[in-house]
Amino acid sequence: MNSPDDTQESTVCPGCRAVLPSSEWPETPKYNASPECAEVAGELLGFEVEHAARLGYLHQLRIDAYGGQHVNPDAPRIGPVFALNGLYMFFERGSGNLDVRTAHGIMANAYDDWPRLVPPDRVGELTAYDVLTSGGVDEVESALLKWARQVWESWPDDVRDTIRELTVKLVPERYFKR
Image 1: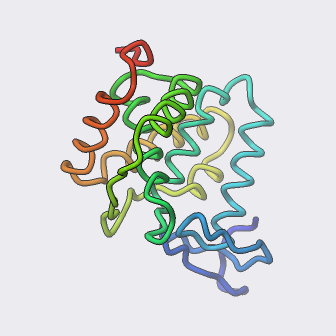
Image 2: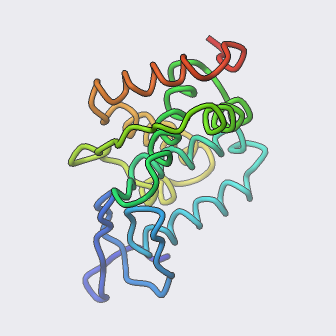
């Protein structure tokens, strides 16, 4: 993915509002994202895999930040709940990849009346593109943490309280590190 410039067509992602050069990437109906932004997310995954020893601990966080920033109102309601659950568990409870994925499985099997979460007008200022283009491994790690925190903190207090309450109600305490 090349950076956008004035010499080529570009598109605006409806989820994060990143302006990106047009591409041939396929549609992604699961997310409220342009194909170009989905391509960036794939490239960010590739960077993470290339630097797995350093960035692997952020794998689920990257997934949840993207999901929390690109909520499709027509997608199943469980998606944004899980994205925000992962962000909550990482930032407020100190939980990592495996604990969050286990929590998702527990929650999916124990509950089915998921709230419809409506994202705010702007879900953080940073985007996956900002993370991908931030520099080397150190910069990407720092940018990814900042991006994910912005996504979590941009959701209204009442939505975050709902996520906290659902998580504490459904997930055993042993999956929280603090």
